Length: 307
Image (tube, rainbow, N blue to C red; front, side, top):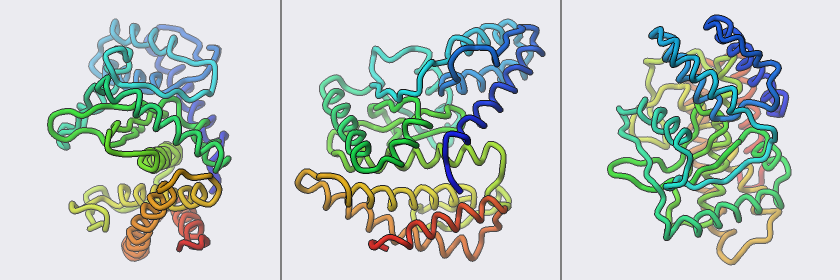
């Protein structure tokens, strides 16, 4: 299956259709089809707030959120890199914290990035994006099409975000600005979270597996038992990490040591990928589109010399 701009447009059109319906239902009358620009991750985050308020009948708050959504549309496709610091917009923080609050069971949070490390981490991320632009036109095309913003976060008490993407904040990637890590760290996490976002466009209209939500399996990359849908996401993520890191290693001019670190990350992911493949062959019940993506991902990795 090919992931391309048509999938993104289809995702956006479903959002516009739902917004048009909700606007009419609430008596707001905003013509979302007629708005200039396109929805971004902030629009999707606000949409989920709107649904929550509509369910409890808070019409006045709904109209306020509808206005915020109307003004959240953007005119271009340029991905931005931001810092989750004191200057980061309050609306963006509200949406991020609201999404993290839905996962209290995992006790995940994020903190402000410290000023003394922020610019250095931003430079590392920018360098990783420059490497992608030079080494993989296909990866850069996907990244610039599907991702609105990458925000670098800080640490917090307890478990904090290492990297994350969310269906509810479609188009946002969060990466912890680890002062001990370099360009390879950012390359892997960008590919990782982009892969989730790509698969969300499929999840929006189709299931990829038919296993029940309460079925749990031992995955090679986690200690806890995982549902098959989560294992499927991890499998797809690993296939892209292996494929695109290999492409970058072969096509980019590397600083000393970067090629070795990338190769180590590829090899570490390869063993987990093939173990996960074996588990899924044995236990996954695929839909038609799920089987197609599963096999495409396997062939993509198997064709590489590293495999």
